[in-house]
Length: 246
Image (tube, rainbow, N blue to C red; front, side):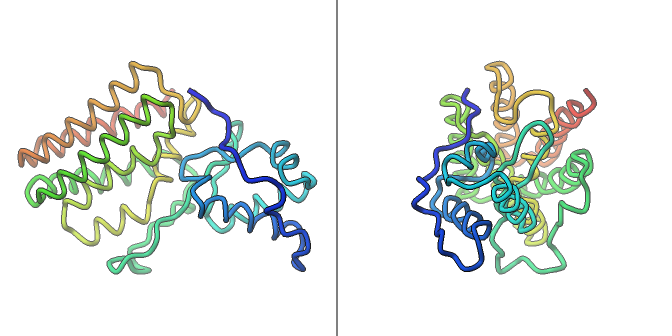
């Protein structure tokens, strides 16, 4: 599975006459790459040297631009692994300032996993009772995307989170849904980046296990078994938490 960063537009996309300076121009260009889909949630940002070459700027400009994007919550940087796109979820009619989860309050992946355990186990149980046919179709579509990502070597972070988000949406609880949306794919990104392996590299056995666990969650919800759905989420997240102890 490839771990190199995605290709970017050439340096002509950099507005060198921007009166606010090259740092702002580079940050704006990278934001455009995100908006255009050339950089998406979970993608590794190209290295400093690659960005220097692509945009013909100094390392100082690159570092300052990355710092700006990090301050805006668009990327997260993990020591020894690089910087990754962590685009926040757009506000929804159900979200409010009281329901937003600020993951920057803690640098501990374990804190994030414990929050997910508390929220997602109950969301899954409610989803089993309240889901609609459309909810199941959404879960199936997300599972198909996750399977495709593991097969072709794409980023698993977005598709993985989409499955969990589909389950939460099926709970029909606007506060649970808003909490999950506020966490966003960054919740998966933080866990993956904390492990010893590369962020998106999964061996076939691990890929099969992840797919199986997500299918078990989906099937429990689909048959309306609240306790089984709660247990399936707990098993899945507990295994992820156990990996943090290595």
